[in-house]
Image 1 (tube, rainbow, N blue to C red):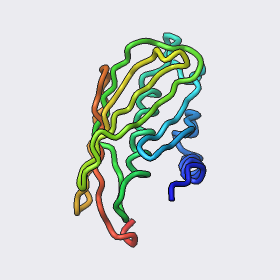
Image 2: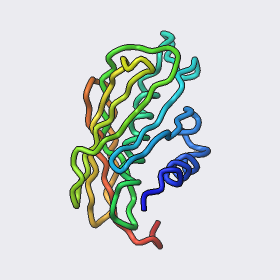
Image 3: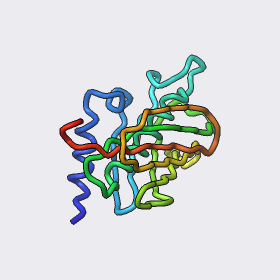
Image 4: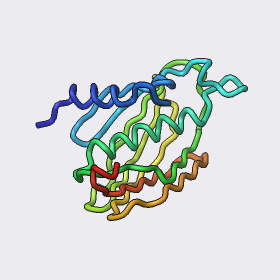
Length: 166
């Protein structure tokens, strides 16, 4: 049974005391094939030019992508780790909310691929990304490469380990 409120409460609770809560990212909706979150853009999220810092946008995209992968993963005893995130920043925003939505493109046995769309309150702000998970039998070293451009790819490796090794 799919319990939307339970999933959202647990996802938000899990992020307490992390960068996610520091940035004010809140999970707002989940369905059978998507996860959404929002973040209020305040001066604390700005770069020196007075607009939203690209790193804050990247953190929002990575948060919704990795959380969606964790929620919808059908394997137990997995560790999720990001590998690559690319985002294209089309326009600046200095206030209001931005909303991220992760939708699966591919949900295979050993790999997941997620599209992440980000919009503002007027549905104009449009960085986007793709999020890829790989399921492996051994723990793999994390390689994270952040680069900025319009559509992107977020790769995630899932290493399956016994709970006792976590």
